[in-house]
Amino acid sequence: MATISTSNSTPIPFFVLIFLILTTFITLTFASESSSYEEKEPFVGVNIGTDISNILSPQNLVSFLTQQKITHIRLYDANPNILEALSGSNIRVIISVPNNQLLGLGSSNITSSSWIHKNVVVFYPKTLITGISVGDEILTTVPSLSTLLLPAIQGLYNALVSSNLHKKIIISTPHAASIIQNPFPPSQAFFNQTLSSVIIPLLNFLSRTGSPLMLNLYPYYVFMQNKGLVPIENSLFKPLLPNKEMVDPNTLLHYSNVLDAMIDAAYFSMKNLNFTDVVVLVTETGWPSKGDSKEPYATKENADTYNSNLIKRVFDRSGTPLHPEITSSVYIYELFNEDLRSPPVSEANWGLFYGNATPTYLLHVSEIGTFMANDTTNQTYCVAVDGADSKTLQAALDWACGPGRVNCSEIQPGESCYQPNNVKSHASYAFDSYYQTQGKGPGACDFKGLGMITTSDPNLLWSSSATRVAVIVVDGNWLLPHYPQ
Ligand SMILES: *[C@@H]1O[C@H](CO)[C@@H](O)[C@H](O)[C@H]1NC(C)=O
Ligand SMILES: *[C@@H]1O[C@H](CO)[C@@H](O)[C@H](O)[C@H]1NC(C)=O
Ligand SMILES: *[C@@H]1O[C@H](CO)[C@@H](O)[C@H](O)[C@H]1NC(C)=O
Ligand SMILES: *[C@@H]1O[C@H](CO)[C@@H](O)[C@H](O)[C@H]1NC(C)=O
Ligand SMILES: *[C@@H]1O[C@H](CO)[C@@H](O)[C@H](O)[C@H]1NC(C)=O
Ligand SMILES: *[C@@H]1O[C@H](CO)[C@@H](O)[C@H](O)[C@H]1NC(C)=O
Image 1 (cartoon, rainbow, N blue to C red):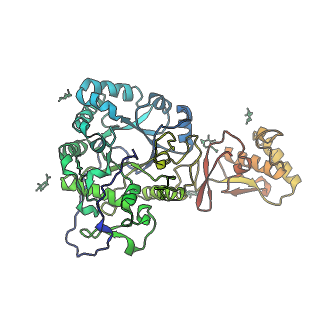
Image 2 (image 1 turned 180 degrees about the vertical axis):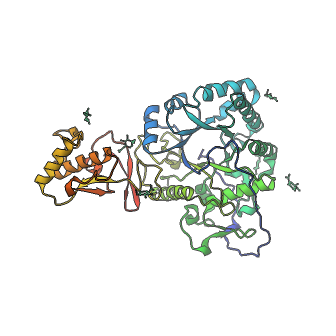
Image 3 (image 1 turned 90 degrees about the horizontal axis):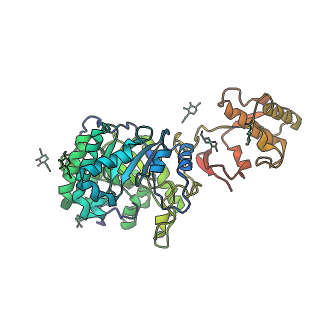
């Protein structure tokens, strides 16, 4: 979880731009596509923590996810009510074994079998469980459980094999970035050798089963712990002049952002142990939008910049400098602000949304057509043109509410879209309803020249309806979440 500081605090000579003569080219070759890791396209998912005072019901949570076009989520447990509510949806879920269940699982195959039965078999495949993350940052937070980690993973895997689900569901365990030492420059990174007795067998397992190395990677903490050495721009994926990029002196690879460097540090660390066929899955990354006086960089603007650029980066599919052919999927930490979390203030402010599903800040991901919105770039609406004669407009409105079969009850006196009470806004309401129900087909916004297609959401006019869920629409290049006042 985000509480864990994820970087050792070694200074980073890396950012001193050193251009050395290329000495070694390190090339990793990846074995063919992993067998059981079925996702082929990189995706952006979200983590759902639940320390929230007014959490949505499981049903409302699933409708919200669907409306926001969120297709991948990760839970910190295997909450049966949420798993049940996800049934029949297209949302893919990674479930988790909480740390406190590791002891039981690591010591008994029977416990593993019953865990898989209770939390996976009874829900699958109606609920699309795609992965199991076993424990959370065990090696760094509860090292006493380290020796149980692989037995637990192996036991759960065996149970999946028995149910013939091992090709559908991956198993791995998320690590803090701090298991990797000397991450900058990436070519000099290696796994903390004290952990080798766990890491090596784990990598063997991941390699054998085609499962990813799960990592929680927080450029935010790297930045906070190395202030002055890591520029904020690199942490936030902001465009950099080429001479400001970090250059790995051993590979001459140019890094324009910290996350890529962290991912490549993991690939180099694995390569040092001769593992070249395990891909990195970023199980957590994000940026807090609010902090206390010691956390001045936890702002909405930075959180927006980080997460928006992160999303674009995944959909760009440009991989990392070392592996341009592999784009890691990421799970944003996190979907909701967890207001019940203890200080520092940032802990309760990692969410894209407040617990009641209103957005925390404005993401700007307009190039991306499929994430975090009912519709994004191509969301269009039909409204009445400016300056139309009100009698002609009334006639068109009457047509829409009559033969056009638009349900116009919301624009009747006293109803939630009656105000503003003028023929133009009533016509816009009816035109847009018609246009949407016609699937935005050709001619569906004609109304004898009185209708006009726009990307500005006319629903803003009537945003008093308390049940309207946040929608993100395009206004120029920016996505503006609109929600009930
Ligand atoms: C968003 O999309 C969902 C599913 O298509 C739909 O039910 C909902 O009404 C939409 N929300 C808005 C505000 O348009
Ligand atoms: C679980 O079963 C495997 C193989 O069946 C065995 O090797 C392993 O020792 C068992 N683990 C425990 C904790 O009993
Ligand atoms: C490496 O791991 C050991 C065991 O968990 C820990 O005590 C040590 O501090 C770690 N070393 C570094 C440099 O993080
Ligand atoms: C990796 O492979 C090389 C060459 O085969 C070998 O020399 C080296 O000892 C191996 N390293 C590890 C950690 O197994
Ligand atoms: C948007 O719509 C246009 C025209 O219908 C289409 O060519 C384009 O591919 C769409 N873009 C996205 C991101 O869906
Ligand atoms: C029209 O919408 C209202 C509420 O918006 C709803 O109560 C009513 O059932 C709808 N009528 C029809 C015919 O769908």
